[in-house]
Image (cartoon, rainbow, N blue to C red; front, side, top):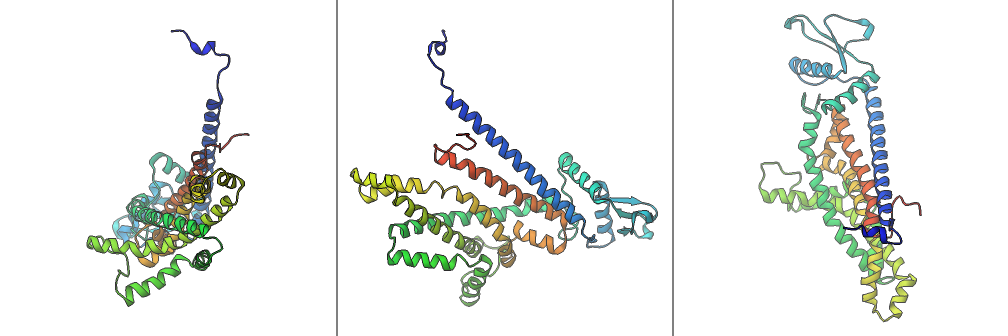
Length: 366
């Protein structure tokens, strides 16, 4: 079959060029995100390892097991006799178990190199020494991350439609009593943190009225009780987001409704409702929908204190506990998750503009 493309007077390459530009932009952003995460985690590891060493909890058997794991990971030295040139020893095994072993701390930069090697070659992030002694940090995080993800997804699902609908209502009723009431309530409630709001909610609905559980239900609780356990944390996490979406939607929609092209649509015969639905809403949603990703990360970070107050066994509570217990291996994995989610949300946020509005081409020169 003859090649018909050779007979054409021109060859269209615009779409291919746009695809290559987008692919280069995505690859560049992923590379920058990887470098950013690497720098953040490296600095966290080095600074934390410079802190005074905290011995693990437990008896001799647990402590010996912990230090042997640290020796295998390359974080401590192990000798059968004292070595004062390495400083004070971190731990000495009891002599009634045979010959004593002395454990000394490895220099921080050597620990850092071994830490990177363990992650790359074995995906070994270390072990807990106080929270769950001698349990792998990745295992502890994996057993808890589901609680935080479900909680934050439910908060986004709950807050997005309510916040956007309230913003649309306020914009359509601009400069009326409805608009003033909604705007005033938003300005008041948006300044209340979730961990302050949950204190009032617990006092009213748990202790005074007794309608809802005052803490996170256990795994053995009934299904109805488990469902009720989501009400308070989801509501408290969504409250600030609802106010944010409402204010943002109202501002965008009011700006669009005053634009020249909407006035032109009205002069062509469209009613006010038709012009708003067909044109104003579509253009106002362009900056709103990508903000949902950023809001998800904001909720995930804000849930740390709330998980601690309500007893939710998520990674937010685990982050606080790892700081209090000085369980640094848990802290590193938790930090890696929050950092990765934040950087990934930034990439998806930029790319979403191009999908929502085809006129936007991220990474294009023109």
